[in-house]
Length: 328
Image 1 (spheres, helix red, strand yellow):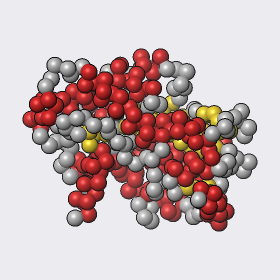
Image 2: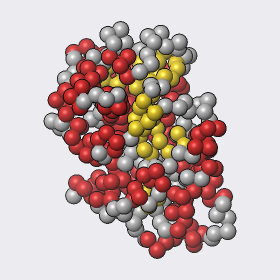
Image 3: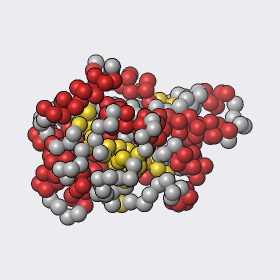
């Protein structure tokens, strides 16, 4: 029963519907990354359908379903339930993710604290704002990025755990959601640094009002894969939906993605937007954690590694309560 209820909710949120290829909604993030992805799929859908002028309504009605998510976890869950193929990640290029969203640092104008790398985030003079990885993707990928930055530099798993414990342990605020973290930093003035997805930059800047912010790209970071998959239902009528997913890798669709702050996979398109997408070394969750699903179970399940290394301090709860009161 619980699995069916989860499936019903996820499918309602994420399906690109058969007849109309309605805009996809990214599951898991509630800020700019979701808004940007929704806008990307709406605009790419419109552009794609312009190329389908020769197809009648009957063909559109027969089209199968295309699914889009901010990360691979929910797609894998659908595969376990038989909604998408078990090998969905091999059916399209780049692990079935036509775009990615790296983790970056948002700082105040001029970067007054001189933050440049992950190690700077645990300096005592830096007030950090994070979101809780047990509840949202931004916090989860901040955790992965911090942990992986230690491993990438040749550190051990024990050193990575110590670093992540310090990162979350001395943060000024570990918010329950991305929305709370963004509101506290951009609107409430909390902290010197907000760890966020690159795709959230427009929404964060819009939330900041007159406050000037800038983006810092660490030398190495983690990238969330914005996954897509084809529903296994109505396999005989899936041509249009499959064509749409293939289209997402075209330079035309990749240009649309770039406009919405989703980092394109196309090297040519990425090069044309080098002023927006600064080069940095990226690693995937799979490289350091095996898979997103495995890492989520090990680190973020109740009693997992995150619970073992993080206990909120009273001032963190006080900062969160103050932010909540200001928002009322």
